[in-house]
Length: 215
Length: 215
DNA sequence: CGTGGCTTGTGAAAGAGTTCACAAGAACAT
DNA sequence: ATGTTCTTGTGAACTCTTTCACAAGCCACG
Image (tube, rainbow over all chains, first blue to last red; front, side):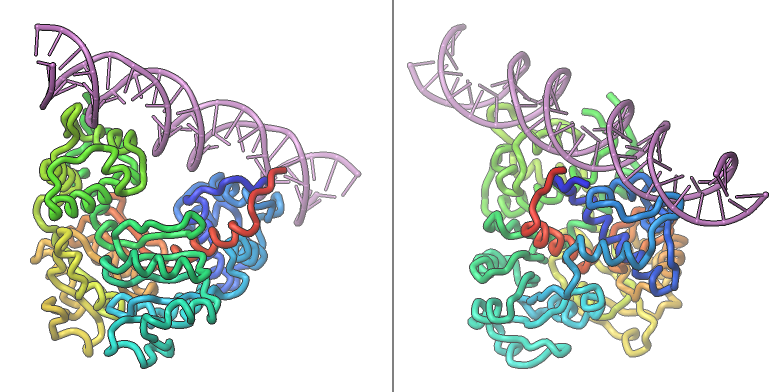
């Protein structure tokens, strides 16, 4: 084993393996091979083994991997031994949808609290999560030991919220605002952007027509 | 110029350039250099030029790129000359949020129609988009010449819907269901999964503690 | 207890993607 | 015209990721 730089693609695949392993676990499967795992997520067996080999040796030669054990190992690698404490900023359409999204909890993320500027929105609970006014942000992020913030605000205020969040001990941000965020290098940031994914599809669709042209 | 295999990362960056160029266009900026573009999305100037060089030559040496022209060129590359016709399957929490998400339209995607199995949901309009029962799916996908389907159904039915969609001339699917989809190779598919992104953040957060260990 | 069938873990090779570095223009001033 | 300054476009070098291929190990069965 040898912990170096782990690539983003490897981490992404670890998540996919984990999903698969949880399904297998529910289905009662006890042992799985790298071929099965590869087939289940659409990659190669060698890739699966290389991915895992970054973190140690989890299988038995000639046998494969014990589903429960590998599941637990990957959960540990991904830092999911206990539920992660998450907060949501922006209880608009997307934000509210996330509050009701039960899959988050089953996959190890607990939305503890939400924030919004709009008095129409704060002061009540949405799907059991209290929505608070923005002026309580810093205070509650620290008090509730929030690790990750989901940013579902209009793009115009995303940067400002990101700044306030950074100062409150939060370690990661998942942003639904397309705009780039300037943040402290210690803060992990990811983006989700529906339009960007659709643009990717649009490109593939057009390319299918135009095809290759060497020059 | 030389159209080969374009990498996913390149396409992703093209989207980011496009966003930036639209903002610049709105702000009245007329000319932009590869350095500016790189700074705006967090990459290097060489990368910007390499990305663009896949598709032709869009700038003037010594001068940079004309914002309006480059914007139009990238829109054309991404197949966004006219709005893409999109349908939504599953008008639940996430689905409804998407129907109200105006950014989609401004970025070139028009949700023409939505579908749901639940009689409580179909038969009305949500944010001006008609929600229809599932049994009209194939018929309307063809009639409305839908190019892309957004899948926001429970994971259990995602595969079944994907099958029905494939048979209706649709070219791409954007799925919010974590599960893998078996589809025709001609169909372009992308996934969005909040929990997967959170898992990626969780990994980075843990890694920050454990740090590197060479062996 | 040895042989055969199977699957892991991993160096080495191949393939992709990114960065470097510089020649080829383009505008402008003198 | 000529020189200066600036920025693109692009081979070549480099780095990172994936694939290949095989020794090492485990189990079952005779």
